[in-house]
Length: 77
Image 1 (cartoon, one colour):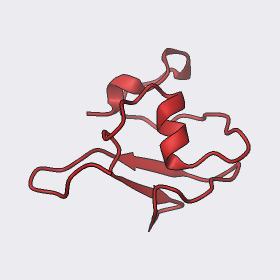
Image 2 (cartoon, one colour):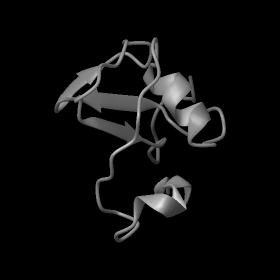
Image 3 (cartoon, one colour):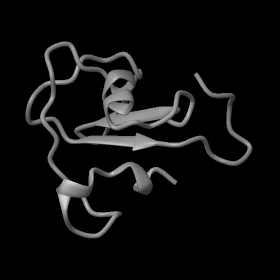
Image 4 (cartoon, helix red, strand yellow):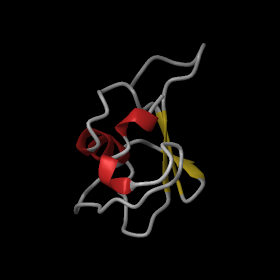
């Protein structure tokens, strides 16, 4: 569902990982906004394979996984 927001300059298949420069103070919410992902389309995030709140500060080198709402899940945050 979120594959369509992968930057065109990232290259590779839509579902493959890509690098993205973080800005100071970025969180999953601000990163999603910079990727033009509509509000509410990211309901969970994992940083370095650990689930964390959407407002967790991100650091350069972090591996970030954004997750869309799932069927039967909670309402968007």
